[in-house]
Length: 120
Image (cartoon, rainbow, N blue to C red; front, side, top):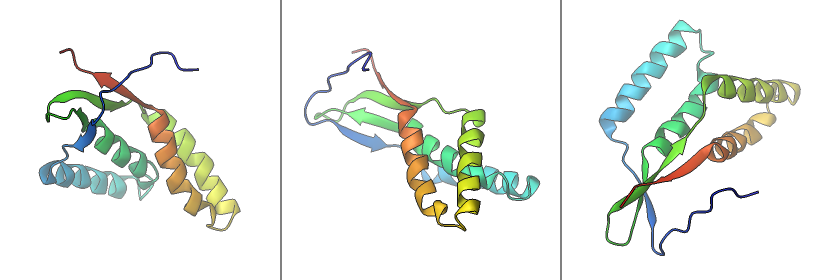
């Protein structure tokens, strides 16, 4: 069921504004978390990596004006819950589930993403 339908003008594009400095800062944080948690943080890293890019993505109209942005409302509990299920599937399938895991992460993240239009 579609609650709030948004009609975007034709010719709109998505533009991600993730800078190298943002990436370096994000990577440093995740390396630190990975060391502290003995690698367990990496199971939720892929969720937050995708969320980070999505939350820094804007909708651009034909004239290059930002008219909206993407917003992913994923929280840590959702990432851990979804990740545990797929870790178990990966273990049970002797690693084959991992191939599906990355697709399911992207699908899960996109299902948690909304479009926020700016007031013009």
